[in-house]
Image (cartoon, rainbow, N blue to C red; front, top):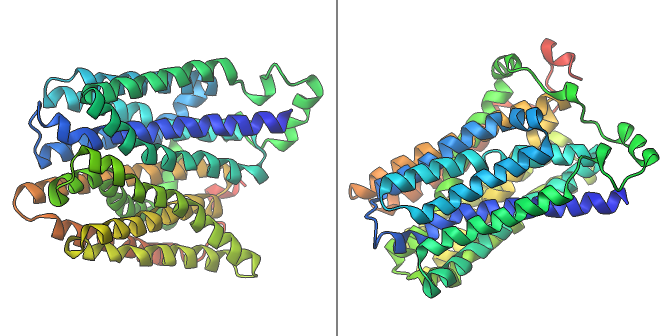
Length: 423
């Protein structure tokens, strides 16, 4: 009974993350249709993404505390309700300012998604099964991104761009109702008996004492490993969010695609991102199984992922078919890299500090995406074209890998006096 309920919950959480990534793609895929009614320059497009990412970063760092305060069931329900209504509100926009406000609200809601999912996993899964559960949940990112281009194209062709946002908001509201009906923490789930609940205390490592006071964030920031991970994520996610938000627009602007062509082909790189998210962790685990150290296994897999990313440098000179191949390689390498980087906090820090470090790393990544997106929009509006932008993003992962090599000399438990009490 417990095992069946666990995997049903992981699938339910994966569906939430898929909805999240679908919602993120609504504006980028629909932008050509929106621009016919609301003039939006490249700089303004980057500002819309910055609104989303800044709000997302703040909520990603602090969302865990909200979930701790009101509980996972109510917390995730409020978060999904918030971001679903925020997504639907895009369809009511009549100006750039209204779109910016909706984007800000969407980021504030979606920033709490992964912290809520992480706590739900902690409430239901023992440590030995958590990585598998998170792998299933993270696969939702690729599912949502793959479905988005053809589905959004179909809605715009049959109706108009406003119905894209109304439909995506409605899907989120339906998920909220299903979540409220189905989810309960394992220790209070009505389908589990007394002895089943009693057996959970030893299997589940999460307790309320795992919630860290905010003061410990400042002590964690003094560690070079934390700064290294935050800086590396800042650079690599600057590239990722550019790919995620600007791929459809690049195909519209530079390759002459229409909405139907974007729907037919833009999903391909996102599909490769899903494969990459599985392969990076698999490679690292395989190296460990063959007798290599944790330090070698993590860094070798990270290095292999980073080595794929400079291929994007040749994108602007490639024919369109090869350009999609290059995007697919970059998306594969990025998500392979991302899976490994988000594992490192668990490798380096005691369990009770992992959530704080992961929150700071996610915050750094979202801010990197916002900053570089603004730079990209400025360059494109001032005649530089996509060439310099892709030149920059082709170097970010390599630089991030060098930062990790310098700041994380060895992938092993960090030794610091204030961390010893958390072990």
